[in-house]
Image (cartoon, rainbow, N blue to C red; front, side, top):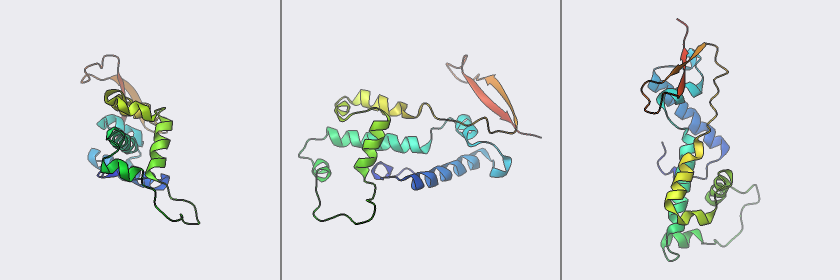
Length: 166
């Protein structure tokens, strides 16, 4: 599902479609349907997966770092600096990949000069989705907090489990 997403200038409409498809797959993996009335965030916690939008952002920024680390004479850098002759269409301009990358960098407080240090860059973009907003308050079923026994650091970690009605 993520194949080639490093180069997509993804819009909000396309992001919503991709996220809906991802949630449908997560529900299918858990053997649930929409009729079970379980909030979407529960599946992410239970399967311990990151949102697909954050993974797409990570891939896009990883590709950007790869491009910026290449020498100016490499083909990918020449294409990046390429200016096409002609005018853009009259209507609203289409979202470009570089615009989306700049938006992602602004969101994560990154700058181009940080690409020179690969380890720091990768660490910063991997932590891009740590504060994912998981909506548990919308659930109508009973909720309980139980400590996770299978987590290595998990003595203090709490995982919210939702028990469905019998």
